[in-house]
Length: 398
Image (spheres, rainbow, N blue to C red):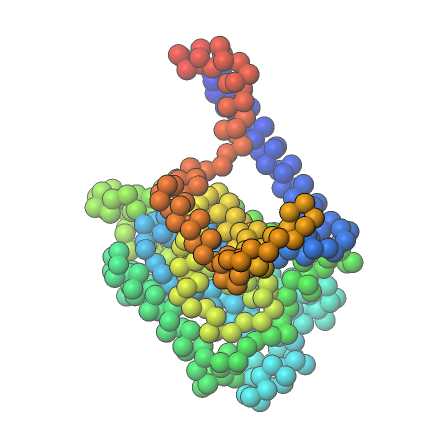
């Protein structure tokens, strides 16, 4: 009884700590966008935070499929592309269509959801709500594509499934660059001038950095709820042993399809956020290398760990785009002096980064978190045990 009460108290304390940290994070993000002065530090921090939040969602969506359901899919770049294009197509302002679709007579879709809502609710509210609507639409279109291709490919296993989904991603990339679809996709030309993070405001309050965190946190929260539900337990059963899962009455195809579609939905949402971050998109950028990068982050964080994917995303983006950039500069600053280093040149950052990744994969084969999750309740319980070791032993003995 006492042990149960301690667990409940630790759980409540953990929840309070988590919500306080979330509130502090959003307060910092809003200050970062509206109050803190722009300098070298913030100009590097803001893009890393935005991209880290986006990649967290994308990696968690891939982990749902690869880590929790055991389906080795390499089609993530294709679903990102579908989500990014869907978002951009439906958020380009009507007056910009002639400039964006200059080679296709202004394009076939001549309306913008954020613009239409802006006329009813005001520009800022229209941009915010319109962006959310377009993001959801992007996820739904990506999920529809997944449902279509899932019927044939999900009957395949392991390497064959990976090859089939990789082929889908390459086919989608080629189709979206097809000039016959140019009035919709703009062919091989880039889409631009659509609603992006800098357009998201509430009154005079800018939410450029807070917005991707808000969408990503909500989506990751939904994925966590799914994993902890009966469907999530069924996904894990399919991953661990398909024969045993089927013997227990779990429909393999149904649950594989469900996981595939849900994962693709959140990948489409991530693609929409990536389009907002980049401000321009082009199908040629969504190559298989993007999928490999996402898979690498999942492996570094720990296959089967949501918090591991989130931590690894921020570490990967920070190292790749900020902390190791000095290796490309040809020099290093120490105590106010600039010292030239001959082998510090363009591309050396990638070499060092690759070596670091190899070290992690070789010596931390299960990743940063393995299959464990970051738990504030668990931290509180550990603190309680350290504070009262006699009580902990007594509880363990019972």
